Length: 112
Length: 113
Figure 1 (tube, one colour):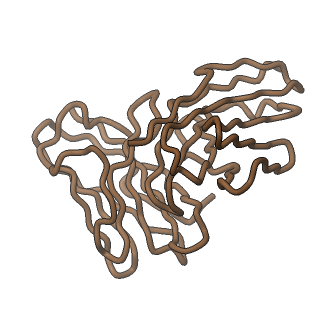
Figure 2: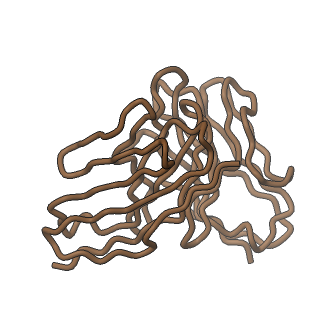
């Protein structure tokens, strides 16, 4: 089955700097890659996603890039703010809304 | 905030007991997926329900079972609870077709003692 690896497990960034989180996946048939943000004690919140027919997608300060050949995708957060502090999970799935396989998470801390 | 709701918020059970967790999907969504999130881990897929039928299952034993109702709400049942079942149980609501997004409910925190 699918295996998703996520790095780093923890990341501390000065406020205003950029943060990058990377994931690799094993199943070449995966074609949907969402990113979720989970604050302490709260639900995972979908922040951005990308499908396999696109190499990059951007939404304000957040962007995701996908390299299908290398089977990896990355989350980029620019101009980080204290409210960006949370655990971020990448995930992958084969078709539409089928099961998501999650990475192990990255705890991002923004230092004021 | 999504329109996905779950109940109860917290639950404490004893090993060997049975538990039922509930999920109401977001309006317009016909598919519910259940995930188990152990402390410090990513969510793990348990199973998915579409049109009241199980539509895919993860690596969980048969004592984890579910239902989906005509209004698309869903239940997760766990029999013969074990200590390792202690986790946050999340349901995610989605729709078939071109929309791929899955939206999570707030979760039920289950503690097995």
